[in-house]
Length: 87
Image (cartoon, rainbow, N blue to C red; front, side, top):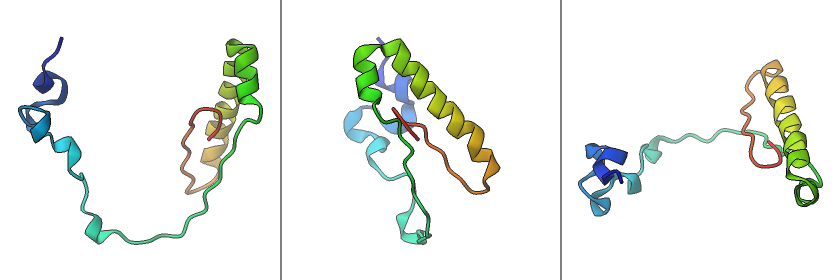
């Protein structure tokens, strides 16, 4: 089994109590607010399809992720995050 240092690097401390992972990696004092619209495009009935057939559900979910990934470049400042049964 890997040591903690091998897995996460010596810069994160010699053990978990000294880990840098628990400290923020950005300075939140300089954050500026920004208006954005957020939308969730989901696949209705995905859970039911997963119960019936996991390969069938994977195909449906793959199709919706693919559709989102193909459509996103057509719009300027769109951030797309495929997650579970939607994006």
